[in-house]
Amino acid sequence: MNRPTTFHGIPTRAPKIEALANISASFELFCLASGMEALGEMMDHDARAICGPRHARGHDRRAHRWGKTRGKIGFHGGKVEIERPRLRSFEGKEQALPSWEAAVGEDWLGKWAMNQMLINVSTRKFARSVRLPEGDVPAPMGSGLSKSAASRRFVALSAARMKEWVASDLSGLDLLVIQIDGIHMDEDLIQVAAIGVDAKGDKHPLGLIEGATENAATVQALINNLIERGLDPAVPRLFIIDGAKALSKAIRRTFGAAAAIQRCQVHKARNIMERLPKSLHPSVRRVLRQAWELDDADKAEKLLRNLARRLERDWSGVSGSILEGVDEILTVTRLGLPKELRRSLACTNIIENVMGTVRRVCRNVKRWRSASMAMRWTAAAMQEAAKGFRRLKAHKQLPALRAALEAHQTRNSTRGVLARQANAA
Image 1 (tube, rainbow, N blue to C red):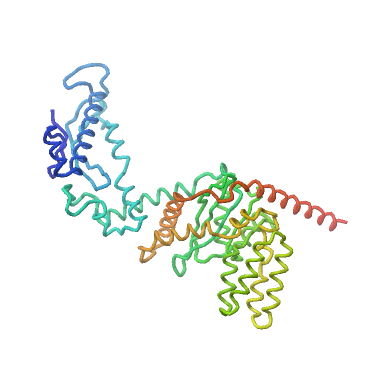
Image 2: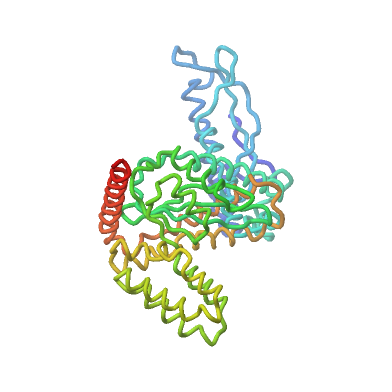
């Protein structure tokens, strides 16, 4: 019987004594040879199951042997070549070997290339990252370790995963919180992403859209995509944004004028402090912290208005910035949420952490050739960030958020009915 072999002298079926001796020379080579030997035995078993024993006759045969051919299979360290049996059905068509098809379908080399690029290994260093230069496993031409081969694998795998992700069904997620934010990839290229938190406190990357600017049309396209995939616009939710007017406009247009929107308090405080001299930082920061911590929204708003009044004479622009969107800054307080839950939902830290991962993953990219390229990288980075997601700290208090959102929706529905009745009268 012809036995499967590999090129470049990798011993796949060496005697046991010789194989054991190889351990001291190169454990990596020994493991590779052992794995390839096991795969060869599996293919022989498949051939016997389909064609029966050699030279045998019988009605159970579904095909007959048709020689052997060489084929390459990828593992994490590159491609290796193995001889595999060829089978032909009685109709003259090629018959697949289940074990070979399963091994090729694993695509370990593609997965390894994507994993390496997500941890910032450049394509030029990919070959060295998977095989030691002084190692005994050869890396000849055609082993799939070149920078162009690694790039092609990343493009193909990241595009497939992004396509599956952006079309996934959202109807099964009991989402209570949605955070939306944008990240500038280039001067005329921005990615707007959404992260959701369900009733158990688990976080989910929801969607991604590209645009030239973070305008209402771009955000609306993202929201429309979420709704098409099963997000119910009638369910009350808390939306957390960084303060961009385009975000508020698109949210209210889709989810109603009374949608609960929380502007990020961290962004607000940072924008205010950056416009003031350092001598005013301690006093202004103290007032803002007091306002964020108060349980009474009216008292908190009064504090902010008093602060704006104090700054109006010398810093009129900053005073106006404090009052701009003051209602949305205190949404979590007006909902009457517990303090621990307010702290978790008063800022966009969840999506900011995701955007930090996007920046880290994409730092090796020197030029964005197209929006689709940026989409692939951003989607891959968001899915990488999702691997480290932890449950919301105050997840046990999320039932209070659901009750507050339902009460908020009921109050605004009642007001709308009364207003329509007053107008009719």
